[in-house]
Image (cartoon, rainbow, N blue to C red):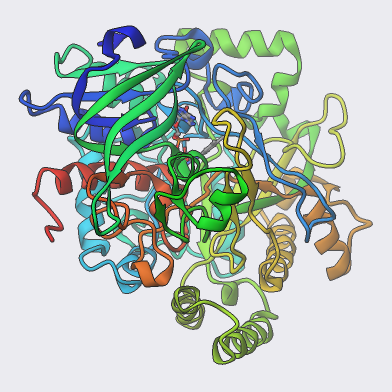
Length: 607
Ligand SMILES: Cc1cc2nc3c(=O)[nH]c(=O)nc-3n(C[C@H](O)[C@H](O)[C@H](O)COP(=O)(O)OP(=O)(O)OC[C@H]3O[C@@H](n4cnc5c(N)ncnc54)[C@H](O)[C@@H]3O)c2cc1C
């Protein structure tokens, strides 16, 4: 049930999930409250937004329409980025029950096996593909398409069919899927048989988190919370901003959470901790809450005027992010009616017509979703890959030998280099039947096709730290984009490859031959790099700010997700991912939530 702040104030709950309303958090809350003998409290800063028509209408056709609205989005910004001409980059994050799963762009899939095995190789015994595979399946309810098209490739053996989260192919194709796959095939990129098996090298159409049976977003609030909302032992407080975890220190300096303080309207409330605090505030706010509670790097805490309870230097560091930039071309007007293209929605009358079409028949633009993707190693797309990789090997090996980098980062870089050598996929591409926001506006009435390039395994490392002791002041977000030059060099190769794909038949015959973005004036590598610096966007996949790593390697949580030097505080969200993965994050966020619940129940990863 949803309770008022005053109804929970001063009460004791076994498990208190801070911002537990988010993707991983609600997963844990639902699983822990399966046991009627334990009490679970979820505290969420945003509103409930349940059955909100504006949220329900967030079909792919309305991507981003919630941005900047305080009931849905935190609308963070990075600090000016040193290696991107001082740009600040918008950093949207979901607010309210469901967190970012309530506003994300639906793509749902798993990373490569090597990405997940890295977690264990970095010192987290037991975290590997075999473990994650079970939990990806536990959360998933894959609904087979009524009609299987040639662009779909799946094997039920690698899908969960009984989990809470409805996952399915978009109910309509845009008709660009097959031409995109053929264009990729022409340049040596093949269809992956079953991308959910841990082999993601190639192209496929990805399933999405849209429930085809009810034509609604499938997310943690309606799939994990609402079916269990009547449980007496599961209480949710919304519009409650956690300001601090109160701790007691034992003689060894180890902290035990005893209370959680939150602000609702203008009053402060306190709840008491029976067993554990589970921090699921996401990659931006989990480190902020730890630091506000005096758990973090002493100099950072001192600068913000916070007393250090536990000196834990890793908090807020090792931040890694996926970013993307686009190549956008004009669609030939005479073939436009053969495709479902989001650009038609710029005409208000057509918008209403498409909305009605979707409501009455589940068809049209609102029924489709950009879901054509590819994951490949640089070696498959660029003749420069060997030279680039040689230079990154040399620069990182030099940094490693001269001990310019920390022992923890050294281990991560060595793994990244090994993955490059093994030709694991690190370059992603997405086809979107639409204009994507960029430095040049679209021409009125013109429809476009965009191929985006995304870098998945950056070498740059950023940070997210408190900028003030005031919990309502957003943290300082500094992803340090392109601090490591390899990230930009790889990105340039990816943009060139986007162009190459758009020049392949049968895609090319549907285009006018005019490129809007970056545009014909952008030709040399330096010009492309400049375009990227001006135009890239975050993919909202931040990880690493509470990395699961040994303490000596800059870790924040151990393999049971417990914060080092604490007895009963865990972090359960994607901030624990220690080395970035080649996938969109939500499937992994749900799997981490599922694993955390079983760790707490003593079923897995026992110490
Ligand atoms: C716009 C967008 C598009 C995306 N598209 C995709 C996609 O297509 N596919 C995919 O797999 N992934 C996608 N993602 C990423 C994915 O949704 C997230 O990685 C995943 O939901 C986990 O997010 P998180 O860990 O950052 O936490 P979140 O889910 O963002 O949760 C954080 C929660 O903490 C709450 N909170 C924060 N601060 C406070 C505070 N001070 N007090 C109380 N509560 C607080 C928030 O309100 C929120 O509920 C997208 C994300 C965004 C933002």
